[in-house]
Image 1 (cartoon, rainbow, N blue to C red):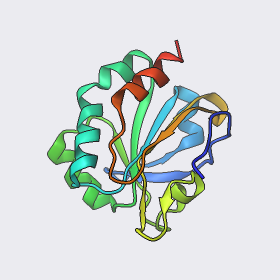
Image 2 (cartoon, one colour):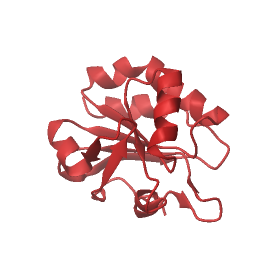
Image 3 (cartoon, helix red, strand yellow):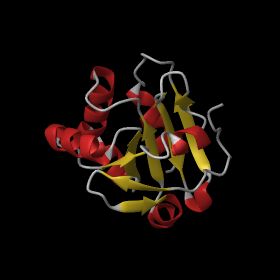
Length: 153
């Protein structure tokens, strides 16, 4: 079950596409964080969604929200994809243990070995301020991001 608003987000440390280890409990002390789980790099819907985030990053920056993509892909795959698409935010690898963080957030699809598309806006003390997900094969509506970020104002 996808974690809901008001829940304390599980802490984790994952490597980004540059191999830098990032820890959620440290990140949220600086600003709210948007965790954007997605199935796989280089896939059509995922590329479209993350490019939409890239193209609208000012919405997050203006609200002082840091965006982090999360998938089960390796750091090397995420690096190649982020470089190709020009992502100006970190993409985190939940590669090993395979989907471990995705499982803690209730977004891992066991039979497929991937995360579903789910987003969590996490504030101070790791409280989930917004949570939304779609069914496999469906892109998230960008309006949901706008609504979540607007609640911070």
